[in-house]
Length: 363
Image (cartoon, one colour):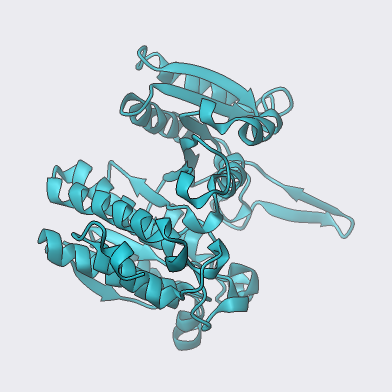
């Protein structure tokens, strides 16, 4: 099974290195037969090839079983016509990775964030309010005069129905509850279409309870009591904001795993929820947990899709190993009050693979 690895920008190379140590340990312990090929994207690609994402890199990605994508410094890229392509959007749209799965769960031993939280946000990732993925040609933002800026939102029936179906399928495996988030009281047509599609797909899953909440109220409800939610589904922009909020409420954005996937094509990409943090790059202080857990989610998704139990077992073991290391205050990264660095954290998680309790012994 072949995995494409793209470290990208900022702390990307550091957290990718830590993640690869963990994956290599799981690969060995569970006999997964994984192989890894590295490619350049982001600033490294820009310097070598004049673009942050080459079309041939995207085409090559289609031949792999999985992709690991580090964070990008998109805000620092030059304009698109000078090679500054949004790498993340390029993969999501170019490979049609429409499902962005973003779980958020509390860890009581961290003594931070909300308690009894275990939810998953299902984010539609190929359209919405993002101007770089809304038009056949050009982008969905423009200025008719120097004093007026307009942005176009794209919502399609196809995208709404398939993200809704993915959410309901996931809910059947969890607590059978879906919450659809919208603003149909104002975005009457676009969010109206989204809710129409969600309700239509719900008819296929009568065993799952469906309720809907307006986006601004949802932000307040998440803060007040996130334990009431199971699977949350929303369009791209809403889900992006809510998932960052949920992850921080669960303890830290640095603990949030994420994958982008398409069950029809079989493609999946592991990607940390957080950004590239260029202010701390090269200092060995970044927390690699998000990308490590994203890689575990990638294995779990591949295992379920291809019916390979060893992949699912390896994913579960990586999650357990991460929790074992995090449970000890002495083996946490600095953002969580600990003192160890990115490289050391990755090594400790790797050492804990197949060795329950190893994290306590090496503290």
